[in-house]
Image 1 (cartoon, rainbow, N blue to C red):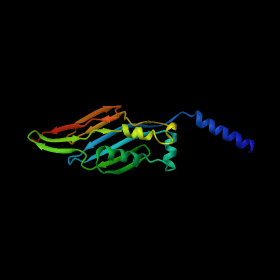
Image 2: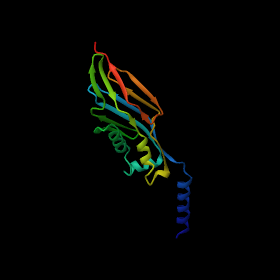
Image 3: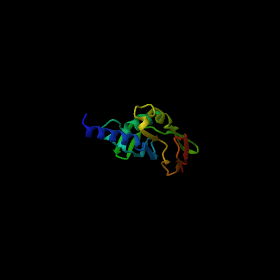
Image 4: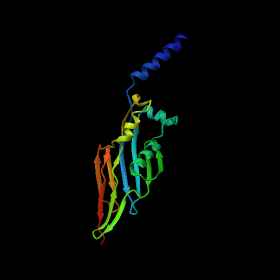
Length: 167
């Protein structure tokens, strides 16, 4: 083997071993419940160098992984609306259960957890090279009347019920 090639190979291996772990970090999650019970969901994230490399070469697709996670959590079909390098937006039909009573219209959202997705990612071959944090720094759930629930650094969002009074 050529001595220059050996040195280059050793340098590359040292770089990979000594480089800090790359990361997929959830920045924010916004769930906007629409009047008909559908929801628009926007997930903003930050990718490390390894994830950007994987996305560029189509080894990984964060939008597809998030779509699958949302479908498994909600039990509903999820449509990808928009994908950018640092976010993905989705539409979930019939996300919130709607019931009408004497007090008004009650919207109930399902519990949402990314714990199983985080655990599943740890089984991939590239898991030792990355750090995954699927607990968004801030999650907002906004109902049609503007009422908002906030959650911070939480990998699970509880089931939420909110009643909108009918005048």
